[in-house]
Image (cartoon, rainbow, N blue to C red; front, side, top):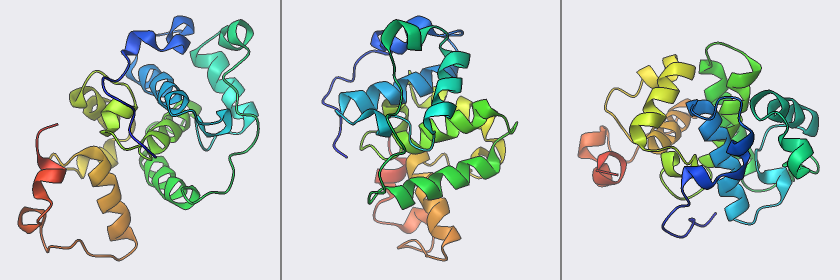
Length: 192
């Protein structure tokens, strides 16, 4: 997917946040941000939050953004997302997140779907989640996915870290035996 043109829209312009039960909660910001990023990419509603069927999406909206469906008529996925080239990648990312979710609640699942969806976009993960900065993303992941976040001992960029975890799961080896020796070190660990 292509990157959203700079500058990224401000978090406050995310219309869904007007209905948020707790507009300052990082998970609320991340879910609303993912939907806004998907809308900015002109994706169909079925791809705004992958992994949620229409009923589950309705529960999420009614819980986190009460009144949003009545006020806007959406956002609601029209149907199950199509089986596209990103489906397997999304499924793998979602599984990685769900295995580390604490507590295992619907809210954690909704957040995992948002993070896995946002990871499919081209900007830094915190940007596509429309969080204020990388520290906010780190705090959110440490809070909701503590076991997974704890494995990022080198402060690797989160999206790169997730994909490295997926490669290791699949038995694939990074191009270099250690991150420090890799030609792409600055790409993963450089300033954002």
